[in-house]
Amino acid sequence: MSHTHELLVVYNICGLANKENIDWYIKCIDSILNQNNEDYQLVISSCMNTSNDIDRLRQEFGNDIFYNIINEILPVNATFNHAVLNCVKHFGKFNGYLYIDSGVHFDKKDILTIAQEKYDPNKFSMVTLPTENDMGFEGWFGFDFPEKDFIIPAGGACNLHAQIFSHDIYETFNERIWPDIFASYASESVFSFLNACVHKEWLVISDIKLLHDKGIDGASLGFHHGNFESFRSPRPILEIMRDPEAYKSGLGFAECPGLQILMHDKSLYDDNNLFVKDPQRLVNFINNNLFLSKESLDYNNIKHEFIK
Image 1: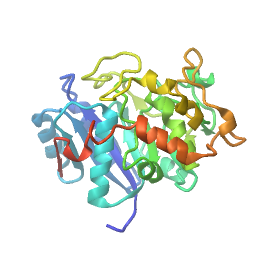
Image 2: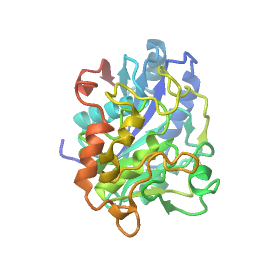
Image 3: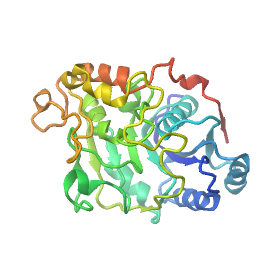
């Protein structure tokens, strides 16, 4: 399809904890569908939810939304990537891809309007819609919540709960958005380097503060809940970060105070510490090391249904 849609909204749910959160899901999906901006397509990305839960959602919402239902245990970065891939195949490309975790509720009807007014895909490759808690701003930047919009520089990060990613990211990293070697923790700390590769900025919107329940589906379900746990990677994450080419290409990892595992070389960046001077070298390292090979994870062979 040739038409470029504005926004793909991906609401991500997981059934591995057996918490039966269907009433909460319905409340959150309703809050998306009740937005006063309709220039988006909504898809539910489901991993190992019961057929009863899916049937109830379909009964509740009819043909208003699509479902990407994955029937094998994968981390949410891979399930999100897979949902986006299938939607692009079905609808064509979007200007942006909005990831929403299952604990996020849009308590106001103008959230998408504000986000789309702020999001300029010619300037930004990521836009964060902050939640009321668990953003990690204090650890990274020393404040609880931003008083005004700000740009995250190379090496900075915040926690992922609701965020737009641009089509540039999708194209640059071979039809994937979220580095998929991570099974738990810390994947957000490499996001700024994806932006650095495409020479666009990461914006945090200050006038959005979403309701957020941290405990809805649980964290890193199906995997060890340890620091820097990897998923199907031939090399452990810390070994990758010790590779001399990681530093030489401009990569950093977990640069926040108290960790600082790999501090990126700022001499490889522009004066604003945003854009890497040799993007292809960094793209190559990220594609070869932070995303899984087709042999490790073939997105075309994941057990799933894509239905309405």
